[in-house]
Length: 154
Image (cartoon, rainbow, N blue to C red):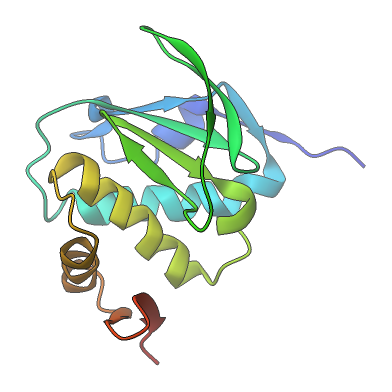
């Protein structure tokens, strides 16, 4: 059985039209088995836009695993996300490891996506502060400072 394909346009069309331009999804299409992570990403983006002053465009790269090749308008390079990081932000680029994130609870996925969006668009480099900001935007998770991780609010 083959998976159907979801296009970049279909994913982009789910982002609020007012903000769509600012999120450059660096993909052509994905198979339908990745539909949920992309739906959750779009949910995170649309939620994030309610809280942030979006004033720049960023490139969002997606990979199944912690390494890949980034094809941009300005560059092509190989990258490797060092564990325990799942997603990273660097220089107006966000790199998402969908292989790991799709294994997480949907609320946790949204929190992780929000974190990278906050790093990028709010220019928050502090890891503790960014987690607190995410929790203020998304009350379905809380930040456990002792464990330095998100937890789901039941």
